[in-house]
Image (tube, rainbow, N blue to C red; front, side, top):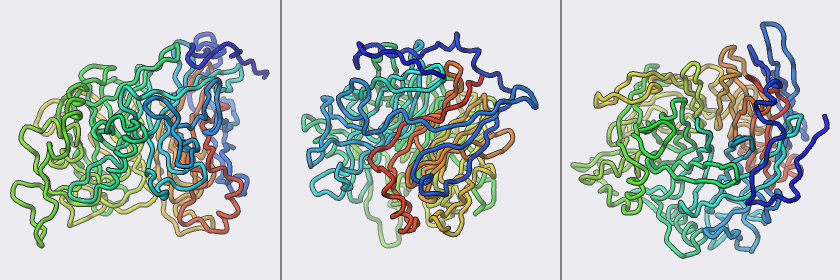
Length: 623
């Protein structure tokens, strides 16, 4: 079909947004009222060409009754690459900026480009399509050197998000036509935005991981000092000193029809290493992916629907119902209330408090490891043991600036490992939560401060299925104001990774099974859980579709060797077409088990510095 693009000759970056060729109402007849959606998966890549590119050879069947269906070929489409200039943007898409929105340059005076695109939110705002995209972290300089190896340079850079205006042609193909970097100066900049989600009220909900800004009581603070140094010297240009308690929060981006944005850091949702947060269908209840070692599971319940500026934060306790050492394990979940606050209150705490204003800590104990009187031994956020005592009157401050530590002090479980994306099945009232690697705190450990989780190590990870219910109470017996409270979790067999002996291509997890789940997204209309990998155990990472009704698992997308699948979002019906948004980052970052000969063969065909932002297309809209 002939493509008809809207002219942009007179449109500037700060002008109005861009209109899709057809609005949803006039084009609704193109969408299909489906009784079932079945994905026909593709084989794993086997040739050099296949292993070095992003591509889909999958198909989808859309049924209109028990037997009648139409079949559609899927394909991967790149909207733009990190090195591209889109529209009137004077800079490349991956360019990072300081507080004055000036481009950041590396020690060789070359542009600092982030080759790590992550979360996508394709939003229809009054008939105009906009894409909000994360740039997660920076680690490679323009000359190929790893940033942390360069003397007098920085481990990481302050990061950014992009707003791209999108056009849609009559065939459903999308095109990036205008772009700008979002200005985070009003909220002090942003640090490691990872995965994200879309709210029920049509805004983008971003994340912020506080790696390098997390206080480690009694041990070397060099990583944290380097993070503060980068924000202070590079982002703020030494005009002010960065405060680490201003980072690690969920960030909401509202996009307006004229391409302007409103950005809010939701301090009342608590500080953490947040992979993402997902607000469920009630507009109030949110769950987080807490990415790291010895982390917690948290739930936030807002005071009012569609408003995240005030609410109550809870932490989960795992009570195992399966045998110790079982695969993935199963458990009942109960909830401990940490506290209630507003964004403004927590921002005030962040402005005025340091770690030692909140806790007393002991860095060393006697030879027998005896916990000093009045202190509690915890392990929260890292492998090391801490001995903490909460200072008087600091309960609410700790609940929101140090929720992981405070949760541990109150008896919640802080043993999960690499907790990543969260997805929601509103029809069955189930949550899906990625655990990229099952190890460390999740294994049996008789010497741990607590040992709630006792499951078998699995380097291939798993995706947990979590049941939700109403009429629940917290540990104090008080009612939780949500009908979507997590009450139990376990792993469906098809979503548990399968370790294998290292194969010829360096895979240490079965290629025809999911390994190291990261991004997840659930489509109610397709009854399908979509899963993207961030695997150190697959040489090529994949995007999968898992039908929760039929239990069928299908491979939809293969990415260049070493690349992580990011930015997963499924748009069920946009003007009669469906899209599976998906990016790749850190291309050519091979696993430790990839054979040297294979690396030599593949490397010349992989552009490590030009990561794509794109989507799987070819699918009709589903209604």
